[in-house]
Length: 143
Image (cartoon, rainbow, N blue to C red; front, side, top):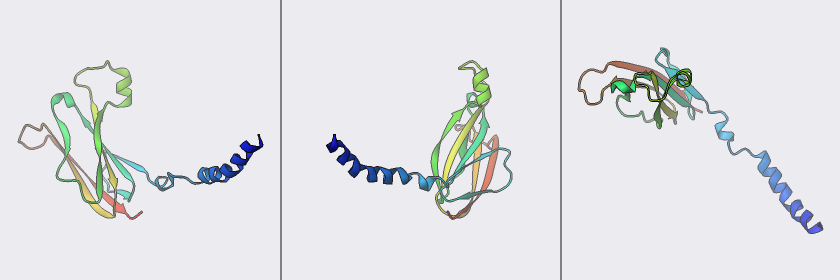
């Protein structure tokens, strides 16, 4: 039994050190800023923050949102997804066509600078003017 305590006496300081250090400490200051089609003012971010752009869409119509042009150099594209609004998902039958959905794009601010994100809603196979456009100004400050 004394042998077990000796190992604990050696391991305890290491365990305490690990418990006091926070490996997620760098991400504590990072936030996610939400943007949607009602956003009209420039959005302020800091390097490390994530911006979530939510745009209404009816995917069954064939239309979807696309980023116009390349991702700006001070942003990192994290991905996109399509989801139903929470209240609608709870009240609707699965597989119904024509329901409103939200197309979500996520970007991480990686460096300082002002940028504009422009999105276009269209059917990808049609070469005409987009049905709708949305743009948002982002002002990224240093961390």
